[in-house]
Length: 263
Image (spheres, one colour):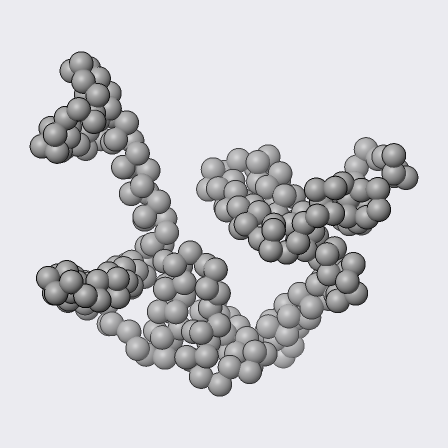
């Protein structure tokens, strides 16, 4: 049994103490065995679960998920504190300094009146901090661990800020048609298919960006509709005394169209 003071209400200092206990001598064998790499996916999953809570509007669930996400931050910081690299206080210190530096209109004398002006200044300050001398360097810094659609969108936004963009969504729509044609050529030739398919996806993301549509949300919505329609197809097939897998492609397509029309 570890030496720990139980309370009715805990704060961030208690949170840090608990994490240190779990990772320390006499703590939890599982927690002690973890590394940054072993819980990398946990951090991503907790971030997505937090976003899911935001989308649901469930405040109780959001409170819980924010705690789980903070636990991942503390977990990683505790690992580094054990090696003497940095502490959670160092993490907080750097974050605070970054916020102060990137808000010269709040903590300095710069005057900015619109959210758009703030974003321009934020990007300029960020590039100075990271010694990025070109837009290409800023593009290359976009995290590769991001979902591919979001990464493509962020890269395209950086290009757009330099004027490399279509006047409106119509140009992007024409580009998508062009990329589809190039994909058809690649399929016919049996080469460069993956490359051309990637260009099609990138063109679709660009169209979504100009339409002000989140590509991840759009694709997730499509996946949700697919699941609902497929479930209805199974119901319709069962009502006819068959399993969906027993139908040929034409039969399955007919049920798909019926399920789609019912929505």
